[in-house]
Structures are given as C-alpha cells and as structure tokens.
Image (cartoon, rainbow, N blue to C red; front, side, top):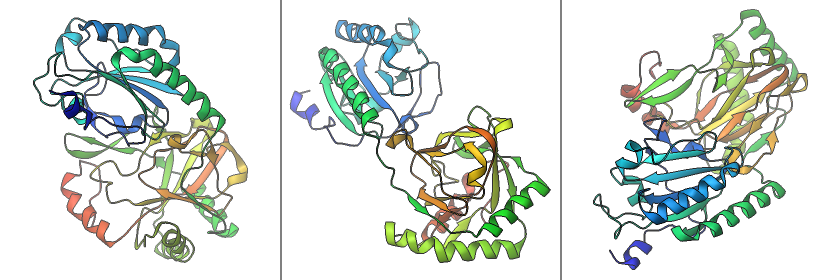
Length: 369
C-alpha cells in the first residue's frame, strides 16, 4: 500500500476521533471508547509487539508509566496480533494503560492504520495519536517519534489545567418556586426512594444495571397526576422556550417524573456517563437537573469531563439543561442530601425512535406505551 493512500485516511489535527466499541485486554469485551473522554488520550497503533519499533514504543510507554493516571491522561495501545495476548507481550495496567484487541483490524482500518484485514509489516501504518479531552486530534506522530508525542502530551495537560473551558449548557434560575421545591423534598422524605440503576447495552438489549462503583442514588417516582401536570407546565413555560432559543430544538415530550436523592451517608455519586448510548435511551435529547435544596449539601455538583474540571450547580429551583450526548457526572456528595427533579426531554420524531426500540428492551426495562 502506498503512503499516499494511507495518508488520506489518517486523522489530522482538529479532526474528531472515530467512536467505536472493541474488546479490551483483561477488560470489557465491548469497551466503549466514547466514555474515555474527559482526559487526554495517547493512542498507539502498533500492530504487533514483536516488531522492533513497536517494542521500543511500548518500552517508552512503560518508562513514562506515571503519566497515565486516568485523570489527566490515559494510554490505549491497539494490537492486531493474537500472539501479543497469548505470549503476554502486552498487559493492562490500571489506572491508565489499556489495550484494544483489534484482531479483525476494524479499528485500525477506521483510523487509517490498516486498509484490509490482511495486515503485515509492509501494510500497517504504525503511529501515535494524541487526543484532547473532547476526543479531538491534537497531533499524530510516526511510531519512532514517541518522544515528540510525550512532549506534546505534557504540554497539552499543563495547558488544560491553566485554561478550564465552559461546557455548552444552559443554567436557568427560577424554574420552580421555593414552595414547590420544599413540597417535592417532603414527598420524597415521606415515601423514601428506591435504588436507581443505569442502562447498558448487552447482547443487543438495553438492560438495567446496579453497580455502586458507578452510581449510588435513590429515586422516588411521582404518581400524583395533578402534581405531574404542574411540573410539566413549568417545564413548558420556563425551559422549553430557552432550549429553542439556545439550541434551535423544540421539546414536546418529557420522560421521567422523579425526585432523586444523593445521600452523603450512602456515598451518593454518578460516574461519568452519557444519557443516550443505548437503544432504549437513544430518543433522549436533553437532560434537565432542577435542584431542590442547593444550599443544604456539599459536593454533588455536575461536571462535564470533556470540558475540564469546572463544576456546576444550579440554585434552588434553578435548572441546568444539557444535551444527552455530553459526558457528565454527579460528583460525590460529601455532606447532607442533594434532592433534584431529573426529567429528559425529546420531540415527536424521537418518540417514534423510542417506540421502535421497544423490541430491544431487556427484562425489567419498561416499554414505551
């Protein structure tokens, strides 16, 4: 294969990285690379660790082990050689160092490192790829230019710490009145909540998972139809027009009527995630967080890792509105209880998507009616 034909497929500075799922060595058989956002990533497409240049590059990674902490930076190596795994020429090392097993060359082809499933030394384009926390390309280096890649990584991490950016969100005060906030908190405290899970895609089905390492929260589902209508009215009057103005999107439907509680005594938190990554959640367009008692707890803020360490908190009765495609987390709550009303908004076109995807819902996930 000629250099020019490979060059056309290779990503350039400023290009968004391709999103994919692939098996990870000693990890998930379906690792979602998209969720690695929020930190700088150094990728190494090396083909086979048996190749002398690849082996030298991997020794450079080992020599700089301290850099990869899964907070400011992570490393992902991409192998196409099964013998690397069999002979243990590569090994996952957490935090920070992981390998994708790209035996069908699907990922390598996606990134221009391979053109076909028949890969040899003469046809594999080994290279380093440096990505920013938004999964955009900062730089690409040939495999023998690893020192340059690491220098660029160090400069990028230092620059990010100096220049935190703002996430593309709406912060809207005065969506709920103080009295309504107090009423919703009281309803939760009178009834209690149930442990809240999260959605994952497994074997083509959207399933509900419970994992306290990923999420600890309890929810109360509001059943009072009159109260629901009152909440919908405020969302329609005070949030929907602002979404239309800021994002040119008209929300017509709402999903979920819950009061959520993050409790410091229970270790309340929700690790970084996106809200629309499964077939059962693909219809969701905007997430809404309406704080009900913002002055009564510490921690428990919203953070958008792709945009730095900055945290966000709406005042009591205020809302934060953001695209369900954004990676976000609820940081650990350290004092008290945080109460919030957490609906999702979408439109009529997305309603048809939701209805069509009923067939992909696993046991325990309610179908759309």
